[in-house]
Length: 214
Image (cartoon, rainbow, N blue to C red):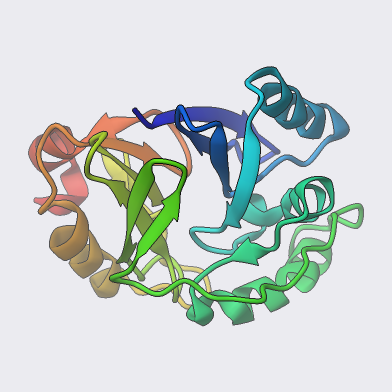
C-alpha cells in the first residue's frame, strides 16, 4: 500500500508530499520547506519512518514548490526532476524571489540532470505513479496518478472546489481546463486528489461542485 504524508509550509501555505510504501523507499514532491524548522520537520519524519529517499520531484517550479529543493538535494543526494518545459520557470526562481517578492534569503535550487516524460511511469519501491501532462497553470505542470492506491497528486492544477491560477507567465486558462477535463476528470470518481494548496478532495466531488468546471 502506498501512503501519502502531507505538510503545509512556507508563507504561501504550499503542500509538500512524501509518498512512500512498505519497501521503505520514498519520493519527495514539491519540497516547500522554507524555514529551518520546516526543513527539520521533513528530516524528522523521514528518519522516524526510516525511509530512503529515492527521488525529488517538482510538479512545477513556482517558488513556493521549490524553496526546499536545495535542502533535499544536499541532505539525500537527489536532484530535482521535472518536465523540460518547466526549465524557464526554475531558472527564473532567483529573480522571482528577489525582485517580485523581496525574498533575499531563499535557498538556490540545483538544476535537474534528467527530465520526466508524460505518459511514462515513475517507479520506486512497490509503487507505480503514472505521469500525466497537465499544463495551464504553468507550461510544464505534471500530475502523478497511483492507480493501485487510488490517488493523484495534482500540483496547482486542481484544488478543492477551485483550479490553479493562470495569470502567471506560461499560464493559460483554456489549456488548464483542457488538462483537468482530459487528464484528471477521467479518473475514477473515488480518486483522492492531493493538491498543491488546501485540503484533499476527490474527482467525484470536483465534478459535482467545482464552480470552474461547470
